[in-house]
Length: 219
Length: 253
Image 1: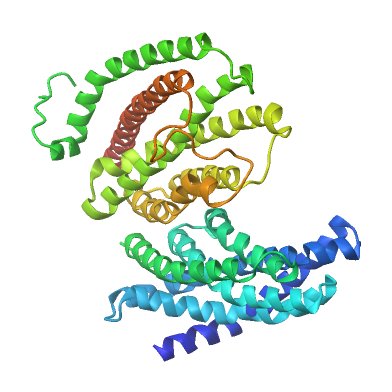
Image 2 (image 1 turned 180 degrees about the vertical axis):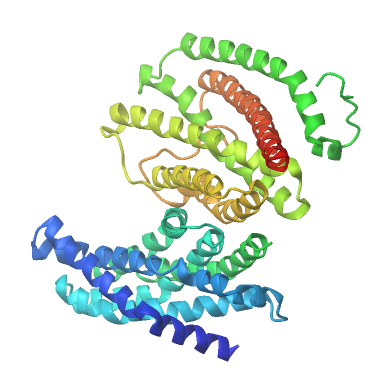
């Protein structure tokens, strides 16, 4: 189990600089926004958490289609289907490795972007915390899309189309928790707890559905 | 088709596509007729009733908007049931049903969104707001389109069906969100007024045409669904015949 986790982690870090590309993409998306909405620092600090969240969401989707593709190409996916370890567990581990390699760097990079966006310390801290808690949900939802698209010749774009609508609740509660931390009257805890609940929910649903899809695509 | 016996003793007999086609040929004219009748009565009632004292004539949009919105959710529920049928029993008609329902669901959702937008302009003063109900229905629309794209992207129909079934079931999470979005969040969209535990909060005068229109829409859905399923079965047979013909031709060379 640990071996698989470490193997996936190493692969995704070394192969084509997956983690680095993700962070770079994240930086680029967030850097493009001020050109679109104008360099008004007040406005930027107000919409900053939302921009950081959207950037992280898009960056997390970037490498998702590769989650099972390489395994399918070199045949090790069939071995994973045949081995004694439940496939759900394998998928869960692969998701965790993928999250550690691609989403965790985004969480670590988010304070820097918060500074660019002129957000204050509380907002930066809240964004980082909500991203840390919420981004696993995106990976778990994305695993379903990746498993579904593994059968397709060019599934990358389709994964994003299929997965993005399902990630909207995560985005809503992630951003609203961040805003609640900054603005006084709204309580921080309820949306934050819902965000945690979403992550736990999709940690159960996502790998199970992805495993089911993987079994059905390989025949 | 008429030679096939119509003796359907148990529900599993419907699994035979030929029997299904024979049944469909019998019931489609009836269903179409009843649907037309319901629409005639429903539309007459919708225009015969008085306008609302607050909303005036625009209240009539409700008779299209509300049934379409109900149907958009019911269609997804039927697709989810079909998806279970595909994954659990490998029912040959279940994937046909799910595939045929997706464009219908997308169409009903689009109708609900457009009529809602037309109703929102005079009532709320805006075409579109990002409130919970509107957003979740819009997501539903996107999911229908994504599912159609997915089932078109995979050549092998049985594999496409099983893969889409997984995604349909995951997307079912959205349906309770849509249903309860107006209760969970305080939004511009009015709270549920018909399907309530303590009975409908809406006046009987409006309820009657709404009820008839809802039945008409449901019948319209089932008629179109059976027709679309029939087309899908025929399409698959044509594809199979073509493959067979191609194989024969290549053997003769």
